[in-house]
Length: 49
Image 1: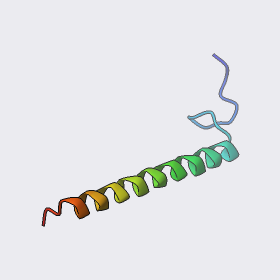
Image 2 (image 1 turned 60 degrees about the horizontal axis):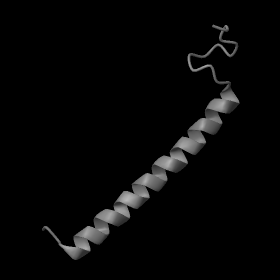
Image 3 (image 1 turned 90 degrees about the vertical axis):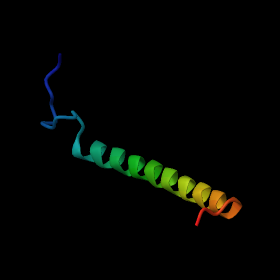
């Protein structure tokens, strides 16, 4: 197994880790937005309170 050249547990450089974090957060926010819209639409269809 090759040595970890970046000195981090993930093996990513700082720039690669920042890029991964940016893409991950965009995906997460997209998922949250989609679920929020879905919950609002369901609540409009059948309000439970």
